[in-house]
Length: 233
Image: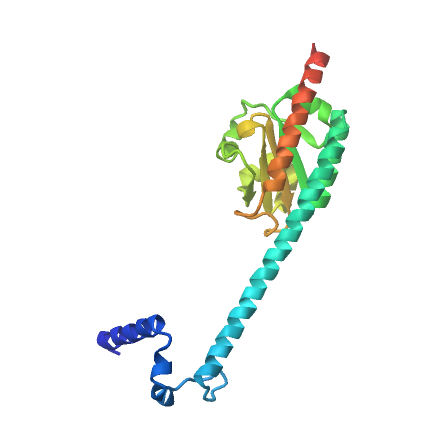
């Protein structure tokens, strides 16, 4: 097929798109048009248009159903965040606070592993077994700097070195992770939620729930640190 023929087809296609009423004015053209149905039988132009509209309608319905499903999930998460915030605000013991937080995250996000890293040694010591102290001068933290500086939750797959730092000997089971900075640019630490499902946490997914929860945790840490300083004095 020559370039001239291809070019002419493009011209005709553009013309018909700009003049959708052309076939109404020239109905004789319809008599010579040939359309092939998927089954191999001949199909009228109207049948082909109806079929295309039906396919587009089905795709729009699928997209609408996905949006409704996502909206429903988001509504449930925000409702749970509100309830969790009230529950956490009523807990003044750091160990009980982080234990309750851990149970809620693993249940609500259907995750497998939770690790919270805090940069304040005394606060981490008061927070219980799910929380680990990390020296802010640790060179290994440099690999997380680009994530923490984004100042919002980052989701996806992490390198083996990062997984090993966060999850130790359980890192081999983690296929996707949500990394949540705590405090401005992760100034207080970070929280990592790991899943064995590679598709559980992925780049571009909504993270509003975790970002708001990070604010709640940071606010609680601001109250815990004076207690830690008094105990260490």
